[in-house]
Length: 81
Image (cartoon, rainbow, N blue to C red; front, side, top):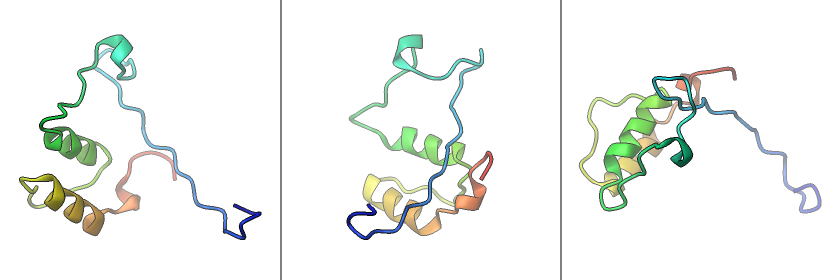
């Protein structure tokens, strides 16, 4: 990025998702995959896990991404900043 004359981006560590036993979620430990035919419930769960809130969640992916981009608030993400 320096050679291209671009500024250094800001970086952020996201909180680790863990199960009831305190283990990180992974396929190796039996975490369920996202349902490719209906990913919206998993996206909404992830959005909420990252501290984001909405008064209403859309019923389709396009509306979800529009809402998520418009309402995203980095200050709500849990953990150190």
